[in-house]
Length: 422
Ligand code: F3S
Image (cartoon, rainbow, N blue to C red):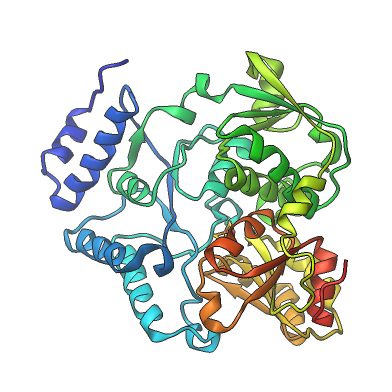
């Protein structure tokens, strides 16, 4: 175990030289550094804060944020926010009660007072100008974003909690342990596939089958590259590969607690270091069927009537919105349809005309929130359909809804007909 060291500037923050808000942040960061045996702190380039919905925060969480903001704390690196419980400027139209909306807006005010950019999305890696670079140290709290940044981009982040991420933003540093270290990025388990993995829903089912068996292990997918097109040059569009990989990562982080996977010959560290990334005692896991995933995730097989079809978990990319617009062109939906995405992505999709096509069909491209963190039961939704593995994992428990799970095509057909087929 190393001795934990702070620089003179960090010690001054801890001693209160920069005010009580910074001292509170440094107390959190330094305490975590000692607990996890870090030698020191590492500067971070970007922070992503999760646990933003009033549904998660409750009154105590909102008060905690207001108090911290009142102490004058300011973030010192670019800092973005996870989805809130509602679309911020359209909550009344969504049917959200003011008793939910007002504390939610207070929480967002507290964040913005501290200098946080109110992006309200779980996909900061899809924002032009925010996508991290390989080797960047981050303090991200959204588990689906952490695994994407670590695995697909080769940046470095632990899975932060909401307060620890905000504290890291205020001091601009995080403890140097875990995935910030080369030796903690080696693979514990080699995953071999013996079945086809074709679309986003299949990648979600794969995330269940693997995630349920591996805990927080780091994974080495030996042959997954054969099932993937190349990543787009501009990752912010998503593309067929980006969309599948964000789904896979989100599900691995939700069904397991995975924060990093490598794909042989494909992800950046695997391309450079090859099998040197395997631990000598790495065990082998063979996946020969996705059926166990579909059986569990398609949780209510007798359910036909769907209230809400929701696509975009993690938040939809430009390429997903384009696909949905293509499928809906000239048609009308019979259920509610939410394509959940980041405001910034919706703006880009609107420029391309895809948002207008979805709206003309009666669907909504919903920003700032999702069907897990929004109070969907209070707006009358009891049955849902999705093509997203993480949504199928969390919505039944968090939002107490019945769930159908399948391909994007099945979801769009269910939205158009109002009935799940398959
Ligand atoms: Fe994002 Fe909500 Fe899914 S926060 S990862 S869309 S559960």
